[in-house]
Every structure is written in structure tokens, then in C-alpha cells.
Amino acid sequence: MNLPELKQLGSNRQILKVDDLEILYSYVTPVAAKLSNGEIVRSKNYLKGSTSPTTEKHITQTYNKEWSWDPKEWKIVKQSYIEGLLKEKEV
Image (cartoon, rainbow, N blue to C red; front, side, top):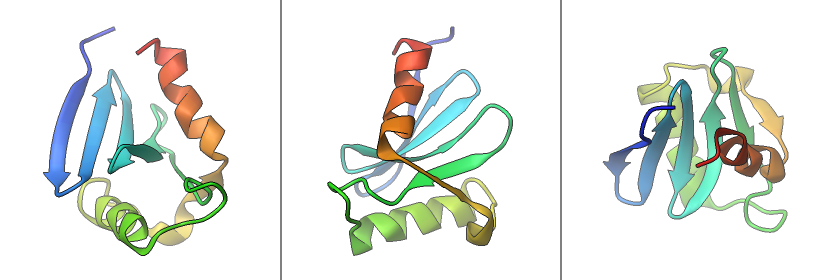
């Protein structure tokens, strides 16, 4: 495993890259990820079952600019799935 890299994308929006996994953070919360197979997943319940307009903007900006992905094709997963990705990488 390589050392994790943190890329600041803007105010309160960053990507943590660990090997071939990229996790989008909005503020301090992981909200979406680009998996090693290229699939992109996102959560809709990152704020105790809710969303926020600013975090939704962060997700859309990242899909459009960094990941070049059509937001209509994202896969929605539970928040615990995204949080578990880091545990799998033992970060």
C-alpha cells in the first residue's frame, strides 16, 4: 500500500487517494468514491439520513470535473459502505 494522498479541490472539498481508491470528502465526511474497477458510488444519507445542498454541489462538481462521470449513472450506496472502504485499506 502506498501512502495516502490528499488533494484539495476547493473550500471544504477534497479527495483522499489510497492506491487505486479515491474517496471524496465534503467537509470531514466521506460522501462518494471512485472504486478500483472505475465504478463511482455515492451516499444519500451522509447526514443521518439526509443531504445538504452544499455537499450535493461538491459531489456533482467532483463527478463532472475530476471523475468525468455522468451523475445519472452513479450508484447509490449506504453511508456505511463508503466509510467501510477505508477500513478495507487499513487507513
